[in-house]
Image 1 (cartoon, one colour):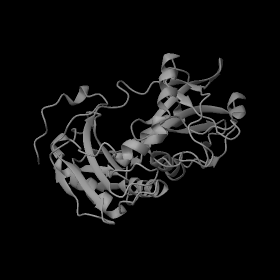
Image 2: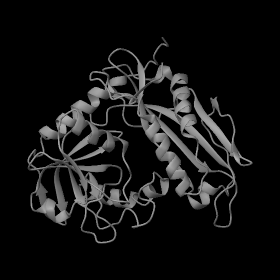
Image 3: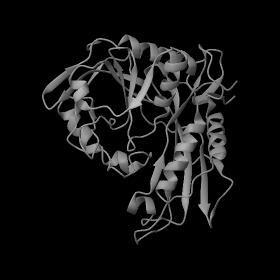
Length: 344
C-alpha cells in the first residue's frame, strides 16, 4: 500500500493540484503512439496550434476513490471513453480507442495512488482526460496532429456540509444550436456558457436553466449538468433532447431508479409551462462532481417556481436516489456488473 500524501483531506476544495504523473499519447502520421506516463505538467505547442486557433478540443471528467473495503475504483469509465470517442468524431478528431482510454485511466490513477483521498473524507481523485489539435492550422480545417492527455487532482466534496437546495434562473441565452454540438463534451460549449454563468452569479443565482434553442419552451439542461424532475406520482421525469449532453450520472440514476428503487422513469420533452403549473414536486441537477444538486426554486424572469422540499434540504426522492447511487459507488451497495472498475 502506497503512503498517502500529507494533505488535509477534509478541507480540500474543488481546485487543481499538480500530482506526480500524467498520461500522454500523440497522434501523428495517421496513428496514435503507444503513450506514456510523464512527470512534466507543462505543454509546449505552436502559437498556431489547432486548439488555440479553432478550439478543437474535447474532454471528460470522472473520479477515482477508495471504497469502504479499501479498494481504489472508478465508476463506469467505459462510458466516458465512448462519449469522448463520439465527441472526437463530431469535431473531426481521430478518436482515442475506448479500451486504451480505460487502460490509460487505470495507469494514471495507479501512478498517483498516493493522491487518492482516504475513504470517509468525502474527497476523491478527479480525473481529467482531454484531447486537442496540436499541429499548426491557419486555414479553417482540422489539425493533422493531436495530443491525448490525462491528469489527476484531489478534490474535496462538491458540497461541504451537505447539499443545500439552490436557486436557478431561466436563461435568455442559448447553450447550443438545434443541430450543433450540445450533445458532445467539447470545450467550446463551456466557453460559450461562461458569460451566462458569470451574469447569473451577479444576479444571485447558482446556475442557468437553458431552454431548447428552437422554440424556447422546453427544459434542456444547465451549463454543466442534466436536469431531473419528480412528478406528483413519484415518477422520475428526465428531459429528453438531441442537444443536451448524455450524462453518465443521469443514465446511472435512470437505471438505479428503475432497478433498485422500483420507480417509474420517463425520458421525454418537458415544457417549462408544466413546471410553472406545479406538476413536479422535486427538481435537481445531476453530474459527476455533485452527483445530485437539489433545486429549491426556479426563477423565470421574476416569477418564482418553488418545489416542495423548500430551501433547507434535498427532497425525499432525490435523497433516496443520491444515497443509492453513492452507496453503489462507494461499495456499500452491490453494483450492477461492470459499473465499478478496480484500479488496485
